[in-house]
Length: 102
Image 1 (cartoon, helix red, strand yellow):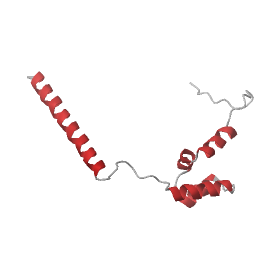
Image 2 (cartoon, helix red, strand yellow):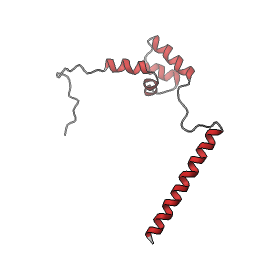
Image 3 (cartoon, helix red, strand yellow):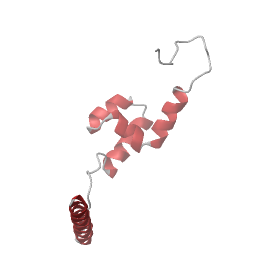
Image 4 (tube, helix red, strand yellow):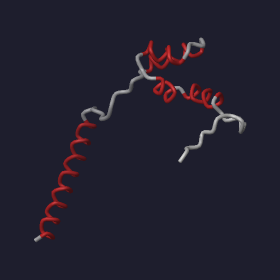
């Protein structure tokens, strides 16, 4: 009896999967894309790059554009690269330990 129920559940799951994929394909044909809209439009991205070139602090750029700092670091690669260079470990063992304590 459990094998029959398992087979029916598996069959139902496959039907749901097929219908979902068909629905997504039909939506794509109508020009609809799934997912969350991007926070930074091309115009906002251009404005962010300009503000960053003018040495505006990242926090201020994020506030002006209405996005998080993480969004800026993710979408503006040169910003993330600059941050990595600044935060690069120096190999100095005299500083505070970053290892977890048990």
